Structure formats: C-alpha cells, structure tokens
Length: 79
Image (tube, rainbow, N blue to C red; front, side, top):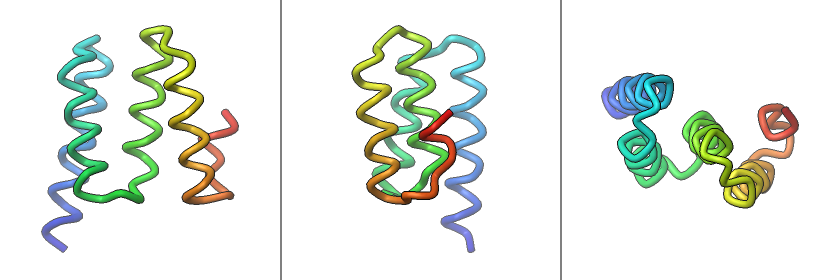
C-alpha cells in the first residue's frame, strides 16, 4: 500500500544519510519512520547502527533490546 511505499522510500533515504555520515538527519528520518510504524524493525536497526557509529553504545544496545521485545526472532539484534 501507499504508506508502506513511503516508509520504504524514507528508510532508503535514512540509510543513505547514515552512509554519508549525516547522523542528525538520518536519526530524524529513522525516528519519523518509527513514529509512523512502531514495529519497523529495519528502522530500529538503522537507528541502532547510527548510535553504534557515533559510539553511543548504551543507546544502540537499548534500541536492539527493544527490537527483541517486538520480535524475539529478529536476527539483527544479535549481530
């Protein structure tokens, strides 16, 4: 559906921003996606990657633990 397409596009943009070290903009995009879709595992993983890249290990860990609370089978939380 249209909402899923928009979220997918936003996720791609957030990932590109993260690759370009545009951490503040990427974080905002990931959070916007999570606000629109609270169970979007990819957005949480992107946010955790962002925190890890910035050496914000506590936040990265908390984000991945939250992923596990949503989906116990989420392999990304173990990586």
